[in-house]
Length: 286
Image (cartoon, rainbow, N blue to C red; front, side):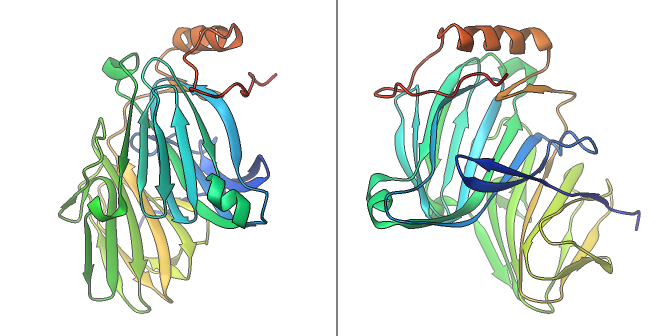
């Protein structure tokens, strides 16, 4: 097997929430449509504390939030106000302009809570970059899964392993959660051009190569590869068809720099849709 490209994530903190961020990196700007990957590390919030990300803008992408533990309250400039539980998909298409907040729900803020999950960004096709924004919530029960021979697969978005997610992705996409029991194996098919594995917990090998924990392993294109669990393990698989080069600046993604500069100027001038009932906002960095 061709050597894997291993992307070590950067350690970040957002409002006190520890995060590992393997994408984007200098080694790899994207995997299929995925241009951003944040792993929100396991965190216990004491009563009276929690995540509180004030309103901030996006263009040219879709955000997908998926939790393993805990809950978040999503609010956006479209009027959405949705509690997102572990196993749900929170899917927001930014299009030409959207703003949102993410915070610990009030009842968990009072009692204390735990949080662990992922937020990824998927670039939009050029024809949809300046389209209408939208939001959709998909309950955990709506996501397809399979469970056989010690391998449990949950298809979060896109298609793969003979499963099709209801999430309204805008280009060929693969986003799956994998749980393998000790000794179980799984063939990673080559039906998607670009793919990468992220090992959250446990010990696993890909074609006899040990996968580092919490590191993004970019798979060689076109190869079908065998994943083997050396212990009970939990992984994420992302991939799809690349959409071409994308520029990213702060929370903005676009195929050309003019759209990003326009968005920066509009946000700085407070010429942007606002989240109902919200006044606090995150200003442009720098």
